[in-house]
Image (cartoon, rainbow, N blue to C red):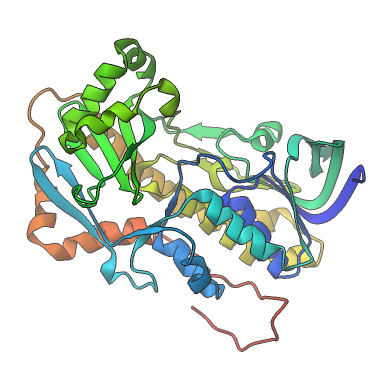
Length: 415
């Protein structure tokens, strides 16, 4: 490998935002290099939720039928078990999208799908086992990145560098972009328990006094998220696994002896919840999107989908400037203007849920009852369309506006 690579766009991080952005830019004819520090995508991701807004993007790319052949599960309605009462909360069957459901797909399948299709374009280059170690800064402008490969250090010089390296972004840290933290009173413990065919149907959340358990149906197993107070994990471990298994059974008694499948703390992964955003997402030669620009709470499972919406908007706004090899600050500013409003609205909603509902349940001692306004969802089914739209589509859904250089020119098709 040469010591220096020259490209139009260097993307740091091969997560959903990075791979989708790389695919869209290469599809539009822009040379792009994606740097991913791991050797493959086959890892235990927590974000496997594919919302209707993302599925609509896949449809607009003409890839939906092939995409849905990958292993996945679908849910069209969701609710919560609050104390002894079930409350239906969201009905996705009325959404104005081609897929009126939420999908669960292993993230490695999602990433491999877009990487495979990206390789159809000569402009697409994905370098695995290549970890960004620093920025190349000339004057006040980011001119690329330094990265470590199995063969040694390389420089990737680019007209634009895009930070897609997650909530602990090295890119945004080295770019000295200021972070505004909104705080988070919760953390989440992720684990799996086997599933039986006669288990209760899809109930996203189970609430009992002092405990919250989210369970996602993954056919052969339940993907579980046990919500805890911020920083409580060490105390939980101190109480022991038997006490933790008893806590799980107290929320989902139907699991019975299956909680004994949890035999080691290594099976339980701590997600330290962060809710923050950059005050400014860019500087000359650099843009951050996805979790690198705004770390989301797991509430609603919308983090991946917001990151992908960022990628679509970025490609729409910057493909032409990148082809012309000139990306100004005003171009980068337009991306933030476009995506900042839906980000802040979504984060505001997540903070409200965390503070007013989740924290209240975790601190409760007596019986947990649904708030009066949630009871309305049971009485008036039409109300279930509101959270379905907010979660499934979002505040400002993005649509693919970039062309495909491998297909002949077509008439404009505004979605």
